[in-house]
Image (cartoon, rainbow, N blue to C red; front, top):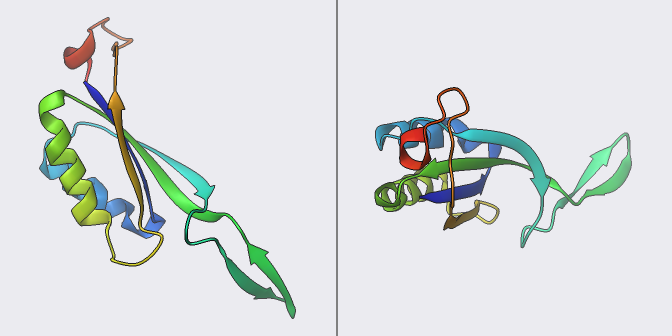
Amino acid sequence: MKMVMAVIKPFKLDDVREALAEVGVAGITATEVKGFGRQKGHTELYRGAEYVVDFLPKIKLEIAVTDDQVEAVTEAILKSAGTGKIGDGKLFVWDLERAVRIRTGELDGDAL
């Protein structure tokens, strides 16, 4: 099993969710987060005063998948979240040691 984590632009959430549903993902966790990378924030004007917005709003998605779903899931995210502009986000994949469905006690792949 693998855990796929993606940090994407907020307005791409619906596109990514639809793409993941098409490749058979049963569920995702989405969290509103703030961060910066190469984009480094931007300057805004509020009531005549300039200020720097260092942390930009993003959405963090976490998706637990079986090993055979990893490629399809990462491709779906890359295609649906990309705009070709700076700040599109990042995608991370790491090993997931254990998954348990709390209600039934099912383990690993059965719990997903």
